[in-house]
Image (cartoon, rainbow, N blue to C red):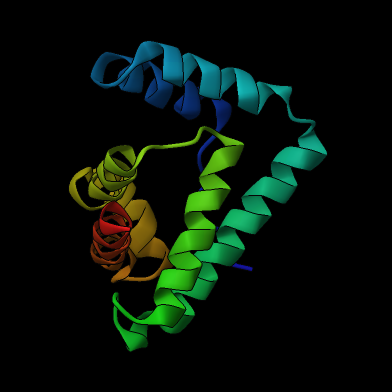
Length: 135
């Protein structure tokens, strides 16, 4: 199975967390780090595998377009997967997807998985957020 975040080690994760604390709510970032550290190595691997499966499924349904029910169902799974780290509000979810597109480090990682994944995630998450704000 292809992996999305397999090349990011604990030191890089700590650096991203430090950066995130400066840009976002420090308590949320610290709580997320604490939550991640609470998992066993087996649980962490299962979470990463589940995330990679979700991204693989997104790639598989990209041809249907970001607004398609198939894509939106997988984006919903992705949002629920985020609960392993923290439970993002809709604006935070959009911000995360924007980071995938705008931050060259994240974009390169996503685009190594599939050359259009970062941009597609940005579009598909925007659709998800827009639809759930109305609901």
